[in-house]
Image (tube, rainbow, N blue to C red):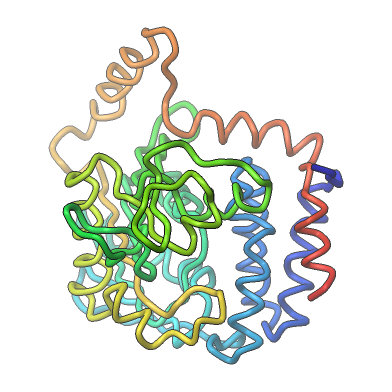
Length: 333
């Protein structure tokens, strides 16, 4: 696959300028470009520049308001609602973050329901900044039906990722971000683009037959990881990011979506906790490090996110090898 080496600054400029040509104002475009650049810099190419076409599709079709301004409402001392007013999620998240952090540091625990947003990014880009403020953080969001519930034969749940972040005294937070499906849909899209077969057990084709062809799985459905266990987690995400906050379940989001290829309008749920207010103010950080050290004692193990940080250190110096296929698609926009 041919590539072009690009600096992170050039990636950000390309993403921002492209979005502005498609109908975003500068503030929304910059917020989306921020998370696209973070994804590329950390080696998460499935959520980087290749997502620009999907963002552009929602703007072209009029489904998304590229000039939306989020509003923030304090529903309770520890519940901060952000309404994206049918805009892209990154600006809503960026503007709501400080309110969530302040509420958690005041109350010990706080939640931020986000409604009226179009979410198309990796969750770790949203959880990591909260954990960097010394808070334990959690986030989840739904999508459109892509995952078969355990025992079923038809997609019902979204890929429904969950993300958890734990702050550390010396070094970046420990953050994991994983889909409820065996593989994130973005990784299947990446395999389709690059012509790679999928591992066994990832998904099925339109007829419900197991398939390793990413194009067939994209037309069919993904399987939940761990069978009924992953299926239950996917259901939990539907309830937290939909039922709890007055937003759509995945099947409801799909019913009103225009099918332009971009993200549907839906919700996200975030939670933040201040560990210094849970009874072990002096010792919680050191205690956690004992667990991390035990994990790393075993050969072949690493903490979640370690590869991202290694990639981040490298790309900040050398830039990112971006697929020319992706660049050609962006140029066509």
